[in-house]
Length: 391
Ligand code: FAD
Ligand code: DHB
Image (cartoon, rainbow, N blue to C red):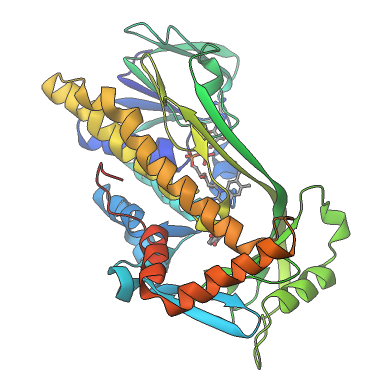
């Protein structure tokens, strides 16, 4: 088999890339190790920045998002006794939307298949080779058949635990890593949210986040120690802790049946460059951020916006300039997002550094309340810096 661009991974990065390339008349095949139901049900991020919303429109996959997504103008920052509304629209002119990553993935897969796109689910034993040649190879097993897919380029969009990054010979990549000593315990509950915007809460017990999936579904997160196990968190303990950490006078978190729960360890990671020969990495395959700034999904989509433009430049004008600049340009925004995610994480979690660090966090939160410049800085990073090569 042959294709122009072999795409490993059917997450937001791989699928968006496939659709962008198709719009430029470039062929691609998407190779995914899981089945369709699994990738369409995997609950992860929920917040889309304006750039991501715009790109969904550009590729013609935005109809359901426009109908069912919740358009928000800002978020709340809470600490005991104070709730501040960060008005993104007034501060930056940009909106945010709540639309589950799994819903976005469903829409992207349906659009790709509808346009005749080639996607191979349940591909096992995926291996990449000849990466520094002009025709890199993806091999995978489909049913009982071993398939060789000869490509002109490979896009490694297979997430943090995929094969793409680890196919690069040792010594090529410089890796930057920061592991946090806490996790998020996340739940999805059948409860109409008792808030009109996300609430990020600072509390002595630790951080908590109130988000939502739809007008009838709440998504809530609690900071817990990194070695915590779900068995120690029966429903009553989860709701009790959420009520304490989000407490505000005359108001309660609305409770309901918990339909899903999970633990997410917190980590920051970047590899540099995001390229080896004709393999280009995009999204979580190249970098991950702690979820506090809601940047992971949005960064993945930004990478493939740049990569699609660079590949179009190659095929349409025979120019390698965009491809040669891809890593440097993508990493500029990756590091901006790393800094912002780290800032939000450090400001809101109990980092275990003691009372001095806790008081500094409160000083930062108070400053955000008093200074419009500080609030605007948070807002422009949270709602997403403009999609240009400068960020
Ligand atoms: P992924 O979505 O990981 O997609 C990679 C795809 O590649 C997957 O479909 C995978 O099955 C496939 N794959 C893997 N290995 C192979 C292989 N060998 N061969 C073929 N295919 C392969 N971000 C936020 O902003 N907010 C959140 O609340 C949040 N919560 C998260 C919770 C969890 C448990 C995780 C893991 C991530 C979370 N993230 C969150 C991060 C966000 O979901 C990611 O940044 C986003 O999914 C990145 O998209 P991607 O397309 O790069 O990678
Ligand atoms: C969600 C997750 C986040 O990490 C975040 O910062 C905002 C929202 C969510 O799952 O809805």
